[in-house]
Image (tube, rainbow over all chains, first blue to last red; front, side, top):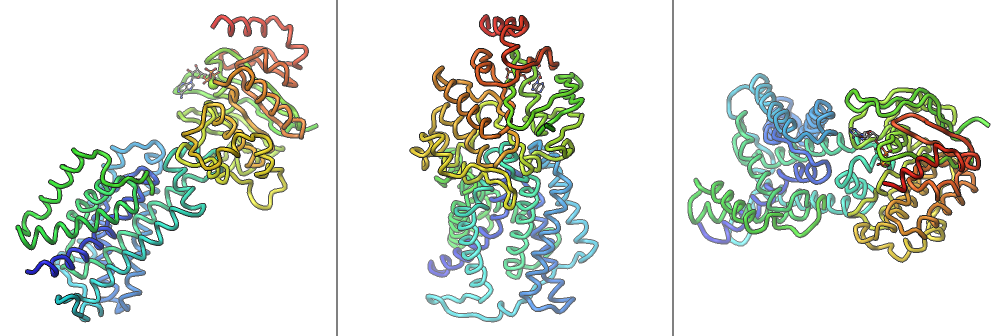
Length: 288
Length: 242
Ligand SMILES: Nc1ncnc2c1ncn2[C@@H]1O[C@H](COP(=O)(O)OP(=O)(O)OP(=O)(O)O)[C@@H](O)[C@H]1O
Ligand SMILES: [Mg+2]
């Protein structure tokens, strides 16, 4: 295990983490919401991608689209169920409801897709090339490229233009935003649809790296939590950097210390950072 | 002339406690109506209910018409889109947005023939805002925030404007300035319902005055006639004693 190899591995992992977390970052930054069903949307979207390819015979890019659409639908259904709680900003109830949704999704996945582990093979997994002496698959490269493009686009949308301003208004004061003529309900639906779509996109790209089971998703939700908090809650740029940092840290720790304790170590880092800098690492304001 | 804004049997309750009970209230085109009353009389409850808006969770019933169209069932943003605008108590602005963004965020719906103030008019009205264009609203003084809140409301091109104590926290001279500005807007055909604690200042600019007490209209009439009304005097003294 050489250093360069672990670094490259960490960069790929980091972009995967950032992509997995970005939905929750926006959810928290714009709507002040949490979604503990996040990991199960990831799981379900991974299955949907696999099923679209393996059962329906769809090309992989189309399967990604199907998974993203499924993510949007799940997000909209969740928000529809929680709309009253959202307006009341009743975070404890929202936490419990989203946890419940997560369990239901696991149940549904078990019924529909069965208990066997599945492997999603994409045309990109077969293509390998050499970078600085180590091998990288086209799938890994796709994760990095898509994550960078996705973050750039999101950053531009939220930084400039009226959509970002609307998001910042709703983030700061949803009641006041109504007086400015904003349909806050629609913003909440849009944000949850984005959350579902983003984590589904992440799943469609990242899930081919590991076997797909109905009980995956827990690690993803933990990683998301660490990235969102380390990145400074609601910060898009912060989430990217935190995801990347966590990925590199996990790869190096896993490669040179012990892979078994990598997640534990990540949490240790989180706790240390929170104790030293309670607002996270990012300097940015919420929703940025 | 048929009223721009009209409420009938407007009742608002907070958790079973009736806070407002107004059988009828109307605002004519180009009219400035002042709403006065002691603390807790229901002034904010009234203007908020007209927009269907609240920071709390009141239950509101009754009919509200804007230009003859029933709007009582619409959510706040839809009422705003139809031309009813509220500047809530405490001149609410978006602290994390710049003055420019606060203003840009408010725009009359495209295709409406309502008169919205353009940027030049806003800066002519409030020159201070132009100087502070790129500051965050959190860096403004209380008075400047009030100006920004009013300016934002005007950008929305209101048919009727609800102002909840726009002069609160302002220096006496600024109070007169703000009320004078409101009067000028009304003279340009805007209809305004103005909540004002300062009865003496309000009576100088309003066409009609409505006195609220415990959620009910205790007295109402033309400003000139209300000037010597003993009930207004009592409210006025009550205010002075407070
Ligand atoms: N969110 C709320 N929850 C419960 N009761 C409320 C709420 N807001 C107002 N009230 C009650 O409704 C009544 C009217 O309050 P309101 O704020 O309308 O008075 P006001 O005339 O605007 O007073 P002020 O001059 O102090 O602004 C008061 O008795 C108040 O306690
Ligand atoms: Mg009030």
